Image (cartoon, rainbow, N blue to C red; front, side):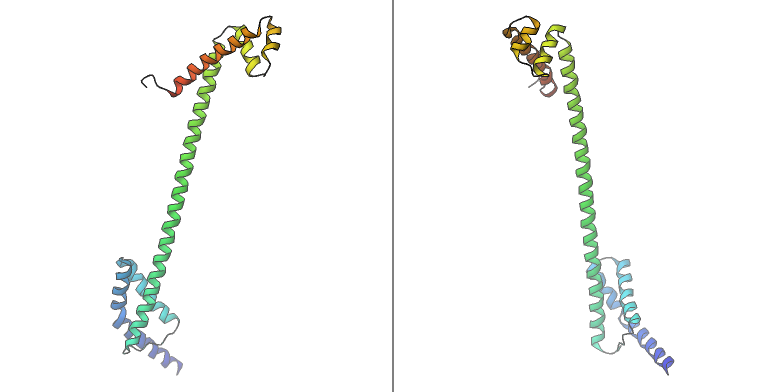
Amino acid sequence: MEREADLAYDENFVKCYNKYHSAVLSFIYKVIYNLPLSEDLAHDVFLKVYEKNIDLDADSPRTLNFLLTVGKNGALDYLRRRKNEVRKYGLMHFDEVVLNDDLYKEIEDYYIEGEIISTLHDTINSFPENKKKIFVEKNFRNRKSSAIARKHKTSPYKIKKVDEEIRVKIREKVKGLYVSDSN
């Protein structure tokens, strides 16, 4: 008896499939505009019905409405998933660009920093040893002009003049890294 019921269900299912498959496929296609995917989703509609043993009446107008509703829900679920995937991919892509942009800025900053340090080093080393020592003590060891003057047996005025001379030279050299002569 159960076998006869299963055969009757299968026959009814095949009848519904043959009658409504093209309508379900056409409806889903109008939602997502992708024929191969529409075919897969239409197949999924009938697969769900079969797996859940839903008894359909091939002659009832409600059957088509039910199948179209299941198809619409499947298509909308697909579109939602697709939209989320695209959004996530877009965010990943944006993060990747931001990271790359930050990396390039860091490299550029290191390059500029290296140029400044190199220019500073070369400029300070271009002065005579006594002036170089005065500048280093004043600017890198934070000693006062009067203390440096006593150590080098000169006046604080002379210390300030040496410091200013080297600072002016450093500004000229570093300015050349950022300002072109054509401006």
